[in-house]
Amino acid sequence: MSERRLSRRRLLAVAGNGAALSTAALAGCLGDDNEDDASSNGDNEGSSDDDGTDGNDVVEIETREGDEDGDEPSFVFDPDRVEIEAGTTVRWVNTDGIYHTVTSTDSLEQKTPGDEFDAEIASQGDTFEWTPGEDGVQHYYCKPHAGFMDGTIVVGDAESENADDADDDTDADETDADDATSETIDEEFVDMTGEDGVEIETRAGDGDDEPNFVFDPAFVTVDEGTTIEWVNTDGVFHTVTSTESIDDRSGGGDVFDATIGSEGDIFEWTAEGAGTQPYYCSPHAGFMYGALEIV
Image (cartoon, rainbow, N blue to C red; front, side, top):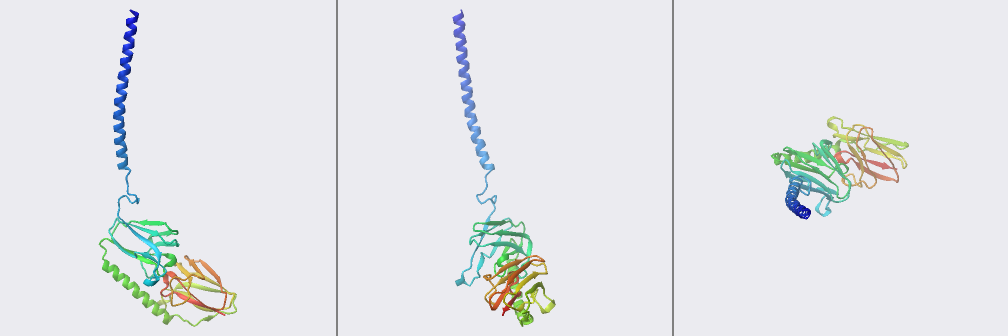
């Protein structure tokens, strides 16, 4: 009797274990399918383009050194003009390893920073992205090389002809301003010899007889060893950039290249070696320049 009961208990135990194993196996199979589905769904939900733009089209603009044989300045945005649709991402890429900015502006003549963007791409490989949400024309430039490094983005239905006209007007204005400066800026050097220090201010031009901004005084004679201070008094972004020739106001900066971006900013330089040292403001190179005659 006890043996029969024992055998029956063993039989029930074996049967129970078999059922448990079958159930576990079935659950395991279903679980694998569910995990595969979950993994597949997870991949779809988490998917995005490798460029991180969530599927938006991307247009790249590179910074590079200018082609001297192609009559280009020292540095350029390439391409410097693009036409895109709203929602397209523009990506600027530093490919030359030189410090640049990507700074929006409402005017390629004035080149004062706008509200849309102002980013640094300081080292090779650095990038900056901007996605316009509506049609329009957006100009931009590089602050350290504002005299020659700029570009334009035409978005959507903004008339490209109007953008062309705006660029033409800018070129004409800069040419007119350059011609005006040669006539209205007094290029007789102000004699400030005998002074230990000389101050040159940036200011807005005076009415119709001067361009928009000037160095005052622009042309100065100083002694060797004199300290020259350039002082920003108008609150507009300027640079003080040396150049080898007053007629070649691009690149330069071999002797000095300083930013005086806000009111009260000062740059100092001590005159060494007799000769003439021309200089200019990069953002306003068409008309804002001067020279030091060192004796």
